[in-house]
Amino acid sequence: MVFRHLVKVAVLLGIAAATPVKAQQTEVNFRLDWSLYGVHAPFFLAQEKGYFAKEGLKVNILEGQGSATVMQLVAQGRDPLALIDYSTQLYGVDQGLPIVAVGRVVSDMLGVISPESAPIKSPKELVGKIVAYAPSESSGIALQALLAKDGVDAKQVSVLNPAVGAKNALFLQGRVDAIPGNVNVQPAQLEAQGAKLYSFRMSDFGLSMMAQGITVNKAYLAENPKVVRGFLAAVAHAWEDAKTDPKAAVDALVKANPTQARNAELLLKQLTVSLTGLETANTKGKPFGVMVDADWDGMQEVLVKYGGLKKAAPAKELYSNDYLPSAGK
Image (cartoon, rainbow, N blue to C red; front, side, top):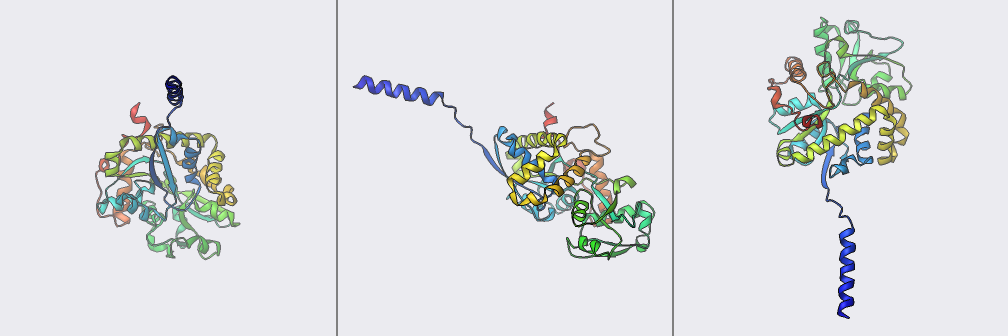
């Protein structure tokens, strides 16, 4: 009887030993900058393809309510990782928030959007025209810098300051001649409502600005460098996949958020435009996410002069490339 019991125990132990133990995953919140739009799709692709899981991560992808709000959540450590607008981050750092950029995503997305029937093709053509943007909007701040850079007197351009998110309605109503905005966001939204558009990028006229990138809480980064490295490795892999098949990325977003199925075409247009901004003029040929001093210094120069940023910080205090996959090569 004892012999049989021992045999049974041995068999059970053998089965247990042969059964692989599932590795414990580290759970982390990743907060997006806004409600869902095209640039978010590759993050859901990383989730669907198991790239996060491969790095030992369980990532909760959460929608945001604007970079300024999301930046505060990161600073408080409530959501340690987030996608935010890097010009907004500069104001946070200026206020002493403990955050640092660890991976640039898209850049040079700011532009000027006008009707196809009355296109505005350069900053100088804004003279005598009416534009609309919210007072604190980064695209509006950039527009003032663009006008100065091109030798245009800003007083010759009339400005309406609607509430955040209301400029699209003014444009569609024909109450303004143009709006500044992100060419990977507003054009697809306006076209979905029947508008025919013309747009140019501010970078075409010498004003380069980084847009969305990944930011992390400094204390969390110090305590969890492996998590941040794994997260960035998964994200870089997914963005490479998205370049080859952007529709697959949008499909992953829709699968995770079924109510977005009605917006699939719009999301694909937004992502396709976003893919053209994975490099800046200063990072051409460099791996995904890499940042350089010149881009941070250039943005600070614009925001100190036109956007109320108190002072420029040393670029190396604002970002780190050390956690990107390329840092290990």
